[in-house]
Image (cartoon, rainbow, N blue to C red; front, side, top):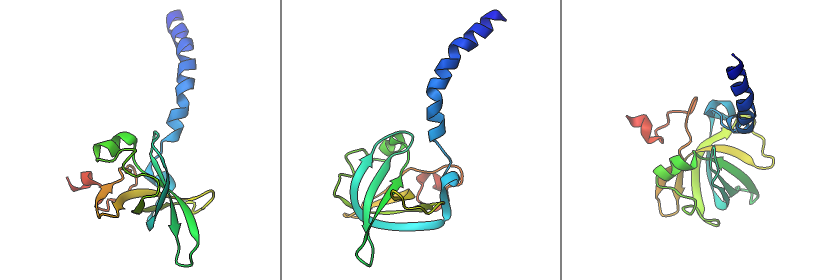
Length: 147
C-alpha cells in the first residue's frame, strides 16, 4: 500500500505537467456550428503549424471593400501531412478559398473563427483540411466519410 501511495505521489506532478494539453483539444460540436457554413476567399497572412490543430489566418475582402481577418482551424499537423499538406504548402500571400463552418459564438475579435473542411488553391487543387470529429458534418469533404 505504501509503495502505491509513493508511486502516485511521484506521478502526480507529471500528470499535472501534461494536463494543459488535454484542455486544448475539443470536439467539432463544442466550438463550431454545423448550421453556419462559410465560404471564404482571401489571402493567407499567417500559418500556425501547431498541435492540437493547425490554423490558417487569412484576410477576406468583403463586397464593401472592408477586410475581415479570419482564423481557420484545420486538423492536426500529422493529419494534414498525410493528406499532402505541409507547413510550406500555404505560403503567406497565397490566395485561397476555404469552405467550412463558423464558430458558435460568431465573435470576430480578434478575428472571425471557422473550422476548415476543404481548401482550394488558385490552380484549382483541392485538399481536405482534416478537421473532423464528434459533431462534424458528413458533408463529403472528409475522404473517410466515403467508406
